[in-house]
Amino acid sequence: MVNQCTIQGIECEATSSKTLDITDQKSVNGMIKTHKPDIIFNCAAYNAVDSAQERWRKAFLVNGLGVKHLALAANEYGSVLVHYSTDYVFDGYNNRLYTFVDTPNPIRRYGESKLFGENIVRDLCNRYFLIRVSWLSVKGNTNFVSKVLDWSREKNGDCSRRRSSLITDLYH
Image (cartoon, rainbow, N blue to C red; front, side, top):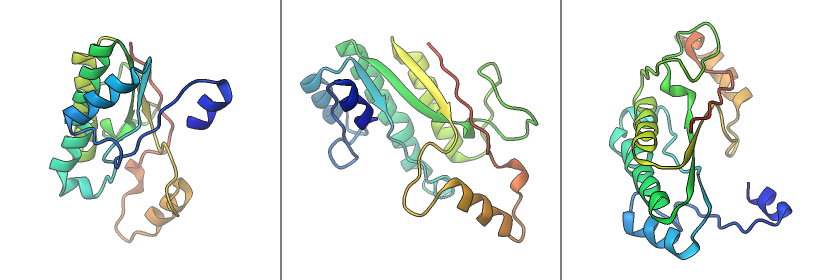
């Protein structure tokens, strides 16, 4: 995203969890007040799906409270919030692609925390886009192909409910 902004001549400030803790309201407000962005792209997430079962408080802190801070700051400074969510807000039992009219029904804590963030955006943010995606990025040696192969090797693993389709829904 930063590369595309640079190519297009759009001023862009990229942050990481080390430079901006979205769970800290003062930190978020300070960053937004300093840069006064027209658009805030929220790519931050606690996305360790399996560990979110045990570390659910951390997942809700980042995927919920952090999103609340961004939504409120976006309102205060007139920014548009682009928030990325996940197809894990669905249970995976549908035998067709999900659409924006389907009712979310997360079955794991990670999906619950992301749905909580979506609801915060819808309820609090004045100007936003909410985008649901599957497998947004590759980090380290983990990628979609390697995960599918890992799942297929699991002795008792149920791969039928894994989400492998791209779901992108825009809300405004």
